[in-house]
Image (tube, rainbow, N blue to C red; front, side):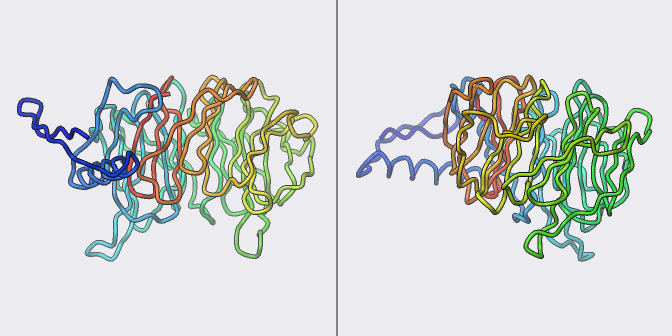
Length: 354
């Protein structure tokens, strides 16, 4: 194998022997990781489909919170900071550009973990779910604004659609318009405990924000009419804990990721609760994630160290590629028309061309 190193103006080349291609690849990955940890970044604007266009080592110990979201060509993620001189350990938010440059960083408060984030379409703003509450973070440098009280459990859900945002805190579900702060729903709902240790509370707003799909009990999804503040239908199923939900853009299907039970990615009819005909089994969905693109046409599923991209209408696999620098788990997000970004538990932030 030919190894090329050095600066663009002074490249060096040498031949290196390996017993087989797998050993050569293993060595290359180790060398890349070593350089990333030293502060080097990978930026490849000419990357082909399935290849990384960006790698940047974020670092920070894995706390169970892997936050990632895209915002107008940039990627936001969290970097965990160990205890400082005052004994406070917290997350710092980073905003990373296409060139792997950090354009903004923000440390919100002491002993605060960032669990999830969602970008507000057509605005340079992100909704961030911390232990201390939901924040509205503008990428133009405007001071962050807290729009909710502290969360009583972490993580719960954070969902946005059609100019509305919804979350669960304490024993209340809230739907609010960030533009004017008006709360259009404030409904009591208590989370059940799964196995005596994990709170079940997950929700997702419909595309028109008129309905909230909510799972507060294992094996049960209710659809809440936001304007009427009441449950309009309820579906039972053979699933256990639901840890993530997403509506299809036409409002017909609800994607739900099951933890425990059969560890599946479900696709349920929002009118009947029935499973979508011909839906892939997607079994053994441990330490996984999924994401629909903004148009709802492509579904990305991360499983077993690889990302598979499907045409959502017919569930035909379009592409499959490996994810670098993962120990056990990662979170993914569509961050461009043909870009998927990944935050791994190894401490790496990457973007791959689709």
